Length: 483
Ligand SMILES: Nc1ncnc2c1ncn2[C@@H]1O[C@H](COP(=O)(O)OP(=O)(O)OP(=O)(O)O)[C@@H](O)[C@H]1O
Image (cartoon, rainbow, N blue to C red; front, side, top):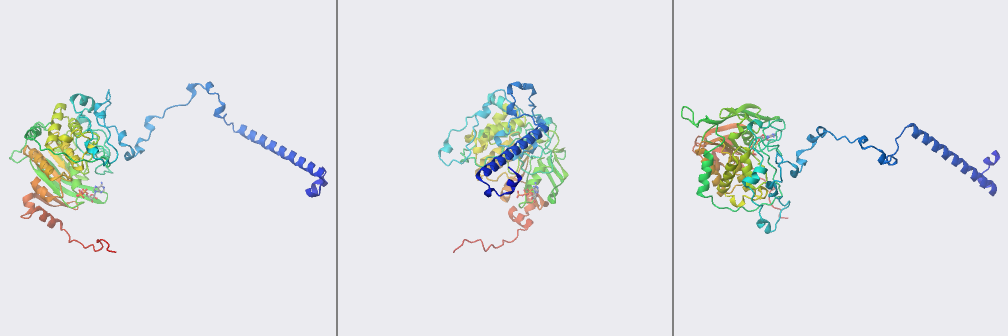
């Protein structure tokens, strides 16, 4: 085809010429595609791209050449996993592996995850009672020596016993202190766990006597310490000297002094946010003060061995709720180095005294809130501590169980133990305590014997005057709509 043909419009060409024009165009297009393929192949070769995997015969690759180096454990960023994202089931409750399947665990089936309204949920077969010497030998972690007590960690744990493995979640947030003592593994209660009604049977006289004997035979008594000073006054068992705690710009407590002697009960009272829990957490060694000091029998509360002299029920207590009540108590006792046989006996007497015997072999997760509080208090007492620190011990407790708690604390005090507790119920403080500290905005507004502080009034009236209760403000909008 000549150049003149190229200039003529395609429509003016004869059919033969048009066919020739199409053949020529097709030839040129084929040549262009061939050039493109050649260029692409050259570029690919220049980049030296390895042969696709599927082209490599697998059997020709020696196994040892396959780069399968494991990632070193220390490179795994465990610390980046928020604790709250770790399912409870993955938390290793038992610090040491057992050689055979632990009946301890087997006998504690998982509670059903949701609330079961059916009546049979209350009468369903209870977990098999398993607290026997033999399974305990295998399943209970041996108590750790005091010398192995962990330095405090950011997870400020509920205190029942020392030297326990890492704790679940903090009761009192301690964002700045990275070494708070972790005293026991307490697994957060499942809010969906079923609660059932406690079956109450009166404690027997024998149970009361047994418990008194146990409180006398305390393993935490320090040899050589005396119950009274040379001038006849009871010995100081707990002292806070100029304790201040700040959280950033917030001064939670400011220059708090407290002296607790053997046999005394001190009630720490105050409005919400006054600093009661902060004071008790510091007194129990769960939280560092910003300044000031805390001593138990003349030793720093954080010194080696001192924690064993304390029994603590913290604010917002969390328990090993996958254990039965009996297991929980035995576990707490073993962690406090109570001999196993005594631990089992004491657990039984405490359960009876706290009227939990009928529920002793049920999971703590299935306990009502009040029952959990009771078993938590029992766990704090099982090693017969010299000082018991209880944050809101009567919260969620019915009047009958309140009497039981008061009675047990009375037994402890008569045998030289001391108690520090908080409560919003002034009448309970009057019943339980002989001394009281009134906190407001972190400052001690009044302290001394209950009689001195109330000064002829009821403690409730005196408290209201001290903290200056403001007149009730009207809320006119708070009325049901009548539209
Ligand atoms: N971890 C924390 N971080 C910041 N502020 C805190 C922390 N813990 C306590 N506070 C603050 O310290 C003050 C005292 O709190 P604390 O819990 O000791 O009071 P409380 O008397 O126990 O109150 P309540 O009766 O309501 O339990 C409050 O202002 C509180 O907001």
